[in-house]
Picture (cartoon, rainbow, N blue to C red):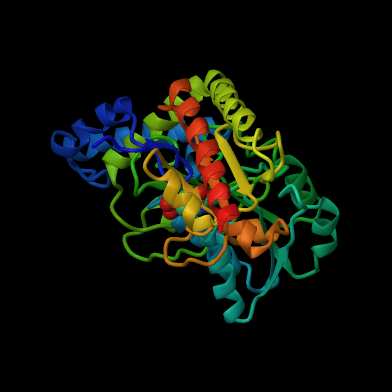
Length: 387
Ligand SMILES: *Cc1c(COP(=O)(O)O)cnc(C)c1O
């Protein structure tokens, strides 16, 4: 049976063959513990980890000592938010974030709230961007952290990191960004953007699952995070646990490949997205969710009037693997909190589809997907009008 066309690259991506090739020797041949300082098995993996750290640091204009490897962006977000909350407890207990963040930011914030911290969830405008005036008004004397994502995982919207960083720096408040969707797709520069902490993950950019990193600024200012995993004191005490060399090597290779191809790939994906939107926008009552241009090149998120969301998804499924406005957190079938934050009704949020176009999608696939989407909506509307 032919499998549907994969268009869910915000959920995860396949591992690039070049990444797999780079990883393989580190499973069986170079398997040493990078912390083993007494023999060559340790030295060679230590060298591989060192090189990977340099690649990652260079990609975001940081230094290698500022990279803390984690199991992914969920752990990096938890370490950043809970780690800063704990380390700066004496300074204050107020955190500012945004209503459209990933649950890996919202849930740690809500956990801190249950512990007595105060959290401001900024709303977003109809295009998904935050209002910088509202951000400025939200600061208090006891604000210790601002956490705003780089690129939204549902609607692809890119928040103005440099402006946010500048505002935070002027007030001496730490700035964390969840860059899980942004790394390798847009330029990230922790210096020019005044970013103090940044969460990253490999599996959204054709690297393996189960590996990510947190950037933690060491200079101007030197950021403290309280460890959330205690043990052998790895990663300068911030994250204990034996380093997972094959995944780390794969992560670095994935970043290297993504940066090499970033400019051309960005153009190609933008082109594919425009072709898809051109086709879909022939339909009446279809809305593009999120800012039309300030978004990830491979992201298209639409809401369709006059169709049932579940029926739409069912009709699309044989041809394309996409996400709906209901299924974005696997455990629940509530309407997407991101689409609701844009001011959508529940019904329209349910009748929403997220396309995540990626490295391995072709123009022929996008054309096929566009045709099938339009004919599915048309036939559902016809059926509805007959009832
Ligand atoms: C996927 C994703 C995460 C979670 O990353 P994991 O590495 O799977 O833990 C966090 N934030 C955003 C914005 C994401 O897209």
